[in-house]
Length: 209
Image 1: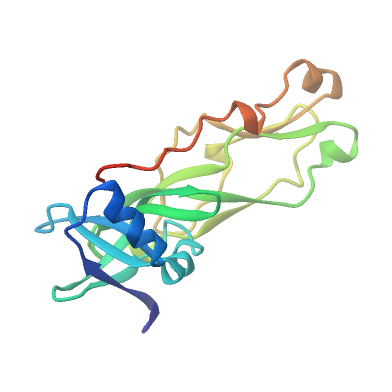
Image 2: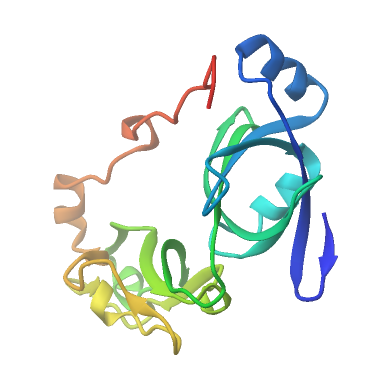
C-alpha cells in the first residue's frame, strides 16, 4: 500500500482460483483472497497482500482508498466485509464507490469521558458500539466521538442525541439507545450480553467467495 495524495492505494492481482486448496495456498503465501463489487466489475475475484491489507483495515471500514487492479483500472473502494480467524484475514469484499454519491456505512462510536452517574455508583452500559450514517465518501469519519461525561444515573443516550459533523445524516433510528447509566441494583438484574453470547463470526468460505 502506498500514498496516492490523501488516499491510500492498495494493489490487487486478478485470480481464477476459487476452490479451497488453491485459496489455502494463496493464504500461505501471504495473500488474501478478495472480491470487488461495482459497476462493470461483476464481482471480480482478486487477491491482495495481507500485510498491506491490514494497514488499510486498521483505518476503519468508512475510509475510502484506491484499489489498483493489475492489468485493469484503479477504482475508489470501501471495505464492505471481511472475515478473520485468529488474527488472520481470510477473505475481503471491496465495494466500488463514487466520490460524488452518498453511501451508508456503520461507524464505530468512540466513547469519551466518564459518566457522572458512574462516579455516583451507577453502572455505565453501552447498548450500541456503531452508528449508521450516510454521507459522501470524503465526509465519512473513521469513528464518531461521543462525550458521555454528562450522563447521570437513569440517563439514556439515544442516537438522536449524538451530534454529527456537517455532511452526515443519521440512518440509525433516532430512538435507538446507545448508552445508559443504570442504578447498581438494576444493572445486576439486567446484565449486558457477554462476548460468549455474541453471534459467532463467519467461518472460512471453503470453496468460493
